[in-house]
Amino acid sequence: MSTTTQRPKGGELAKLAGRWCGERAFREWVETIQANPCNNAAGAAAFVRAVCGIGSRAQLDHDAAARAKFDQHIRKPYAKYRASVGCV
Image (cartoon, rainbow, N blue to C red; front, side, top):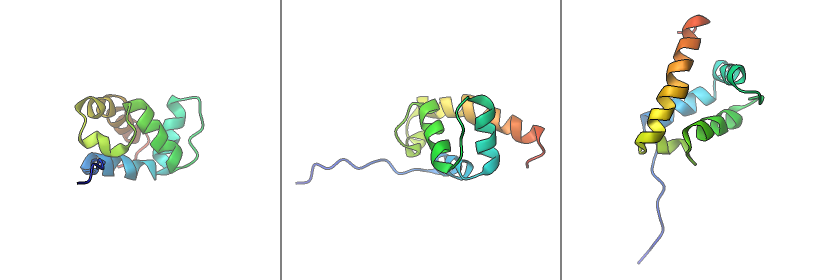
């Protein structure tokens, strides 16, 4: 009998976070709200994980507290930023 623990798979929210981490505009926004440079997708992913208190973006779809942090501290502020700079 196997006792390996499977990691939760990412759903739509994890995919959105992954897409954003790959966007230059998202990384530029991250740099406007933190002192550390965000030069690549890995840095952006680390930012998302730190803000949401998770070890993997996949947890965004399975942890209500992480999802709430993502919405409050990332999704809503980034949406405002995108609107302010004309991203659609």
